Image (cartoon, rainbow, N blue to C red; front, side, top):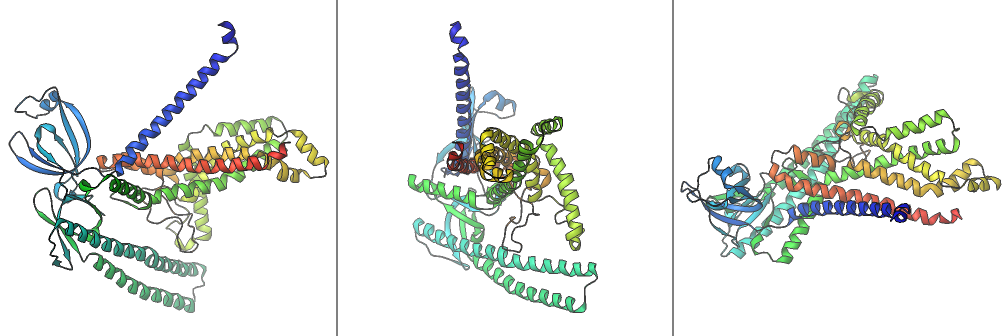
Length: 553
């Protein structure tokens, strides 16, 4: 036994076991997040309950079961609930999403199993997903086309007509939204640039009557184009709002809903498994591709995905050359001495600084100092409204570049130190200069280590939230950092981030129950984005490792 301990085998087994347990725990956590997040998009059955409370008041409830729990009977009694018969030690209660927010207030409600008289899953009940006020549950009983109620003889005819009319309204609404974002947005952007151009001439004392007349003529032409597009926009909106649907809700009343506010309708209770799977994939696709709605508790997260990936890629472009150059200088050029040693200690210590400190530094140095100076030098016509002197994606990328710089420097230095000195000496002996040796021999051989540092930097930067809250990220960004307006890439704009989206939905949402599943879904999406970025970097690293393996021999 003593020899076995001295051989080190127990420590190897303990280390392997600890690593295995850690991997199992991480995989288990990821599976839990994936299950709780992806199950949100599965089309759940829609129930109709007949309820009767202890006072004999009867009511009807339509909705989806979101959660259930066992509540101690004594706790309910102490809260003032009375039972005609003692239900036992525990009572089951259900959290039901009822929707129809404009008529019933909150779209979630707890019901006790003791109040349930009956529960059914009617085939003709539908869930209508809307652009505002959440879902609407009820029985579609008629379709109104251009003010006239269509004569439909069966539920199947109503369903087919409703689907076709909703598809028409959604297509027209998409055209209106595209017109508003692209053409009308472009005109507004050009008018603002002309206004700033005129203001710049005024500040420089170069605003002649001719220039003023030219700018005025251009603005007038743009305003005329705007009026034409505005007319087209209103026409599209009127066409989208032409039709309506009549729905009988849980109160038994007929409600008329405009189809321009409805995104989709689903008769979940008569779907088969394949139809539910298709609906599930459609729901995931919309979550990835759509913009958020209803204070981020509805819709998708595409702006957050785009902002996260764009900011991380911009950070990688900034941090890689600076980190590599610093590592090359420290390892290849700097003399070994106390100053170099202190610099290395400082670099290592920088990796332990809390991220929020980097955020405060970025806000003070990048945003206020550098951004304010840029505004005064290049954008004085826009002042006092800041252009670069406010949080934006460029300052977020620079802040995270400084945060992850020590990782790239240390990893690159490790890669440089593993290259034998004989390789450098052989290259110099063959007549190459030191710069040529670095560029053609050393850096290619160290490229896998550089990519390793970049992988670690991306993994950390993609999950950071605290510094971004100070230097660029916002709850809802009206436009993306990239569009079709010159100069096409707008680094001064604020952006959305998946990490901040999780924080906002989970802790700042006015509708906690509706936000809870989205926290899991967005968390799983953030992990997926980080894994995808890392896998891409790992594949590049492996390719470089194979490409330059011959240099090691």
